[in-house]
Length: 140
Image 1 (cartoon, rainbow, N blue to C red):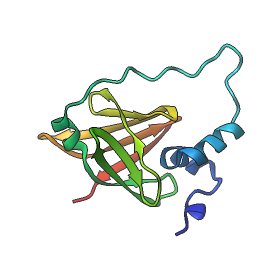
Image 2 (spheres, helix red, strand yellow):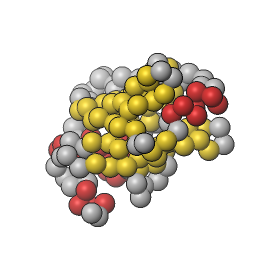
Image 3 (spheres, helix red, strand yellow):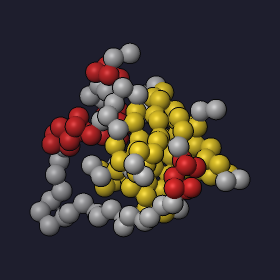
């Protein structure tokens, strides 16, 4: 399936688009209503340091269940001491750790990627953005 088709203008996919492709997400944000004067977007939580051992726990391949039922593969990896997320056929984006297995991405302060950890291993998680929740499953 082509990227253009996968990211149609359907409102349900708009949230996923911002997660998966920052440049396209910025274009969509320009189309959305801006906050009223004096109403700034809430600031992102402060970034917390994360050890190399903790980073390795999140490294892996995941499937994101998009609002339209499609599944998108996502890879989380470490490069030069920084965690990155890279959706299939998309650019990598640095992940910002907020603590408690929760991350954000710089281009959208509403985005939260929270991983589920059981017995010290990541099993999946949830991606929440602009009120939408998408399930994430770790590939075996």
